[in-house]
Amino acid sequence: MISRSNLHTHTNYCDGKDSIEAIVKQAIDDNFRSLGFSGHAYAGNKIDDIGMKNSVRNTYYHEIRTMSEKYRDQITLFMGLEVDLINPIRPSFLDYTIGSIHFLPTKQGIIEIDNTPELLQEGIQMLGGDPLTLARAYYEAEVRFSRINKYEILGHFDLLTKFDETSHIFDETDKAYQTLALDAIEEIGKQGKIIELNTGAISRGYKTQPYPALFILKRIHELHLPVIISSDAHAKENLSYHFNEAEELLRSLGFTEVMELTKDHRFVPQLLK
Image 1 (tube, rainbow, N blue to C red):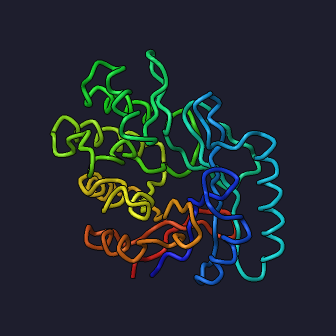
Image 2: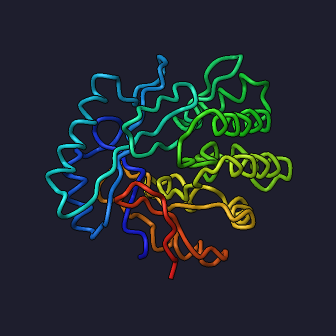
């Protein structure tokens, strides 16, 4: 396994299961070079029950700093957030942010993208009942978000497909759907974002393949866009979940490198040997 870092990590400060220190110890046991924490920033709406409120977030920052000093001889720790379109905060002291859309703002109201299949279906009905209409709104929002926010990593690009293997909400083989996704990833690529290959939905039993879908990954390779592997870990045992398979998938598509955040706070490529 080439990738010995995970920048998409959730703790019990948001919807993760484990404490920061427990996760750090697991990463050391797993021979990680580095580890980044990316707790959910509070989206600022009544339906967000996982984002960290300001007071909790400040404690989160403090604990990461404390653990970074305590374990500095064993691992490099990075401080980040996963930010959402409807409240894209960016404190200047962060090492990085991940830009994701869990809550899609529309004129009809806020649509929850990845909570439950039922809530996603309600969102589709809010927009008139056609799944393609929601897909269009989602991918247009992804492009808009990439232009207005300086996040470094694009999180789980096609998150709206989370339930497709069981609930079959979107037809990912449909040419119209694929055009929406491919046009969006090309525009986002122009903003210099690093595209996340995210294995989190596999570890939690929702999908058998990572985000983004294979046809999108092929286009990412054609566009020579940078990628980074993450597990979107919500439990310490999943820090490097499916990383070997993710690396092999990238190699099979012609990728030769993945990005990694270094001690001097630069994203640099490392070879997929």
